[in-house]
Length: 77
Ligand code: SF4
Image (cartoon, rainbow, N blue to C red; front, side, top):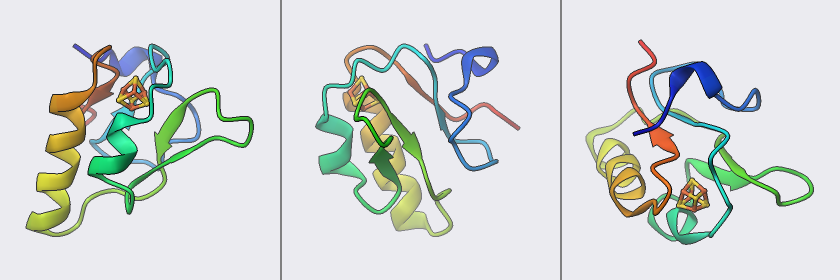
């Protein structure tokens, strides 16, 4: 489970985030390319946009579900 005390600082504010356990393996970018992207040196990914529509919520959830290190969370209320 992702840890909201370890949120990567680039994440835009909101309930969805990537924490510092991202490897990065890339697979979440295939699920939610409109929400997630690499940092400049491609050492991790982060949410550059929070989901705003039901479809975007589904994409974010798919990214969370597929993440092998459980780096994606949605409990940052
Ligand atoms: S799926 Fe998880 S470990 Fe892989 S790049 Fe995305 S957040 Fe990082």
